Picture 1 (tube, rainbow, N blue to C red):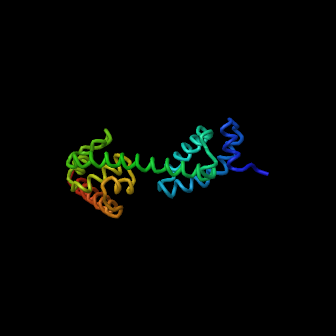
Picture 2 (picture 1 turned 45 degrees about the vertical axis):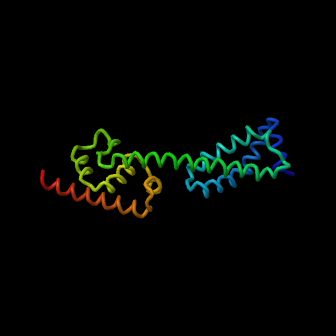
Picture 3 (picture 1 turned 120 degrees about the horizontal axis):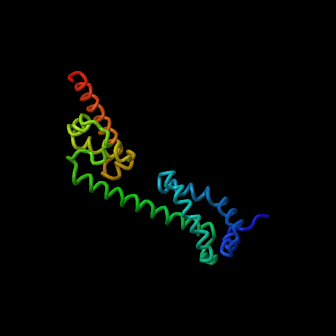
Length: 180
């Protein structure tokens, strides 16, 4: 018969690594599922899962069964760390959006060193809102969802601006190709 969750946490508090392995196997799928739904990113959920399980091991001696089940304790810890990750990500996006809004009419600061002067000039010809989302996506590596969050606009608007900007860059490239 397998030990209860509470017994496993108590054994973890005593330094029993095998108990932690069992506890990890038992809770990791539930914690991961909760984190994916909460955070919305599998990659971030994987990172937070590791943080939660490490913290479960480190704080096992603080678990008080009179306050609730071990499952509730671990899942509340996961929820708390997931919310921390969301807040951290929002803070980074807010900072990025503020920086982008301060200098929307500049050439891409993160443009690769080997970007041609013609590409840089073509980017400068784009409307500011198209250039900004293209810079964020291609030079800073942000996803459409991250760009939407950072700028406070719908994902569909981000997609449209990227598509229009790329189309315009393509048209400019064709014109430049025909007129050397």
